[in-house]
Length: 321
Image (cartoon, rainbow, N blue to C red):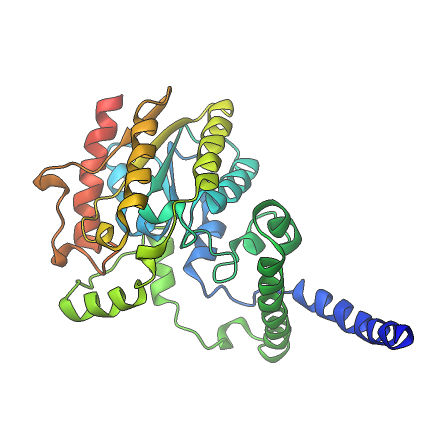
């Protein structure tokens, strides 16, 4: 039996080594095809902003940097899909290490989803592999996850690494690569903002609600709350003013249970009382209400809604100065 085990291990070691080597090529991109990666890459061209916006897809769908140009404020939207405190930590660390000047203000977007297991999806959005200084799957598993997470990340890295090597071999000419650049060019032009003219309707609502059927069972994760406050402390030590914002979304809250919403509300109260932190919350009146025509789905504003919210945000930020 012992000899059999030794043989199995000896047989699998070369396979594991080859798999590990192939997985290292998961970020060897022939041509960038993902708007999240583009935001990270493009951020280096705006590495001395007055305002740096970070958060989830809610952030990149809601804040329009061009609106800040009119008052001579440099800004960049570094929102990343599913970003919660864990994503925001590595994204901010990477940006601050690469930037020639620290941003004067870091605006962090949070929502109900930020503190659940629905945020920081390392497997679906392995942004850690595309940073200016990429982080390994091992690093992420050690600091933020566990063995099952590591195995899932490695499985995806292996598939992507193999495919990337194939694409590098097949497509010798950059322009031959078969993919549409229009949507991604819009993200570059808008400095991270994701424009959309889509409008929420009953059909889209039902479709997305079905995808969110497990949300009522989600638990508020205190470790993510703790991470948020550690990020705040780190930014303050770096000399950045920290501003926390919540984008209006009265539809989204219907999908979370009462206990979760109570814990989230307690967090918001704590943030509003935290020294040297500015908290901008969605207004309770009509100014904070958004119709279906101003949303592209349940969780995101469209361009019309983003214009409305950005104007409100500019007004609130102006009151701070």
